[in-house]
Amino acid sequence: MLINSEFEVAAPVERVWAYLLDVPRMAPNLPGTELTDVLDEDSYRGRVSVKLGPVSMRFAGTARITERDEPGRRVVLDAAGAEEKGKGQANMLLTATLVKAGTGTRVTVVQDLQISGAAAQFGRGMISDVTGVLLKRFADNVAEDIGRWSRGEARKDTKAAPAQGFTIGLAAAMTALRRVFWRFFGSNQRRRAALSR
Image (cartoon, rainbow, N blue to C red; front, side, top):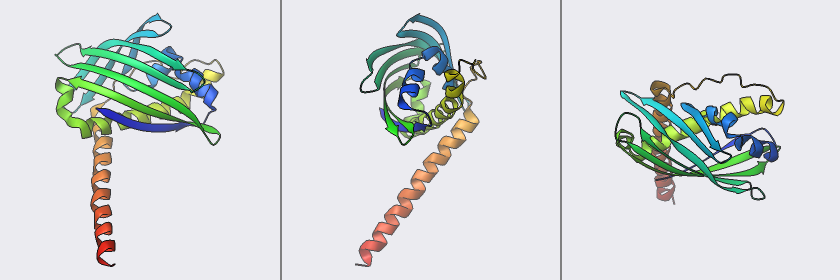
């Protein structure tokens, strides 16, 4: 499934580009992510833990930067993992593109995600909403840490906290409700406009 999203960081493109390529520093910004090994400049091993309601998932796997387009500010990451307890699999091809947005940077993210096992039961809509919530937290964490990184300071919190289900699930549910609400009222407004002609 393809998931498209974007976020903005109040820092110049060059700084955000360099920060995002500093994978050991950047990875803990995504809730539930733990980098366990740096294999080489472009290859990493780690874990991702997510708990949604009664379902807990912990994937272990590898991620590799397969493309760095410095002039185009585009990076492609290929990641694959398997549940440590369970039969689930996850594969993701992530493409991030950075462009100038005022004095800051807009990061557009396209994820081609393939999952099986317990995570697949949530369906495309919920997975997309949860991904959106996690990406928002990632963007907030980047915005908070990039200044420290620029000054050569340590991270404020170096411990990887698991992505917790209730708050993520609640935020994802609110996103879904807003989407349904606007579809319903948007279609009613279009119907009224058509009838008034």
